[in-house]
Length: 354
Image (cartoon, rainbow, N blue to C red):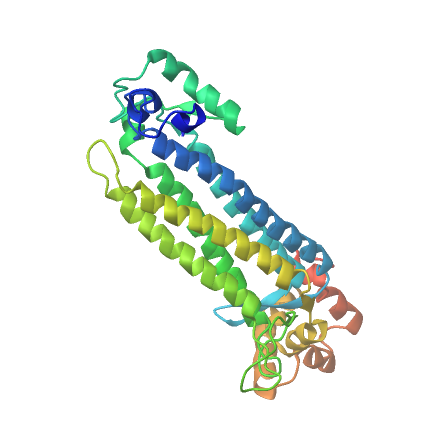
C-alpha cells in the first residue's frame, strides 16, 4: 500500500519492504496480543453500557414495585414474603457485580508486551521504542496502557484473556438465572405462577391459539449458553500454549469478541423488548400470598413457634388462609394482624410494630 501511495509499482520491495521498513525486523508476537487487548477494551465499553442499561431499568422496577408483596420461594416451595421490588433490586445488584468483574478483568489486560518482539526478550527492538510505545498507544486509543514488567511472561501467558472470558461467563450465569426467574414468574397464565405479565413479542403458538411464549427471555438464555461455551474454548486455548508463545490466540479472540457482541445485543434486546414493558400481576401476587402458609413465619416473634406451627398445620389440612384462622380464633385483632403482616413488617430486618 505504501508503494501505491508513493506511485511505485507493487512488489518493489527494494524501495519499501514490508519486513525491513514495515515490520522493522521485529515480530508480530507482541503486536497481535496487544491488538486483541485494544479491541477487547473498546468492545467492552459497549457491553458495560448494555449491562448498565439493564441494571438501571431493574433498579427502576425495584422502586416501582416496592409495595407489591408476594411470596418468596426456596427449593421451589413457598418461603416467606418478599416484595417484587426487592426481587428486582437483587437482580440489579447481581448485574452490577458482573459489571465490576468485567471492568476489573479489562483493566488488568492494560499491561502489554509491545517491544518484546518474538519471545519477550526484545530482540531487534530499540530501547527508545520500549520507553514510549505504551504512552503512544494510550494517546492513540484513549485508554491507559502500561508496559508489562516481564515481557517474556506477557508474551507466553494469556491468563488475562481467561479472566475476561470468565467474567463474561459468570455474568452470563447470573443472566440465565434471572431470565429463568422471569419465565417462571410469568408461567401460566392460568396454570402457573403468573405473577408477571411479559409483553407479547410473537404471534403465538402455531398449534395452540392464544399461547404466547416468553421468547425474549429465551433469547437471553440461549445467548448466555453460547457465552458459556465460548468460555470453554478460550480456557482450552489459554492452557494450550507451549514455552514462549501461545499460538492459540486467534480462537481466544474469536470467542471473546463474539461473547461481547452476543451479550451486548441480547441484553439490550431484553431491556427494550421485555423489561421496559413488563407488568406486575398485583392480584395474582396477593392471591398466592393469601393462600400461602409461609406468612405464618411473620407471626413467630408475636405468638411463638408452637402456636404458629399449629396454625400452619390447620391451614394446610383445611385449605383455609392463615389470616382467616387467626381472626376466627381471636389470636390477634384485625388491626394488629394488618400491622404485623404489613409489607414493611414482613420484608424488613427487625420486628416492626412489636
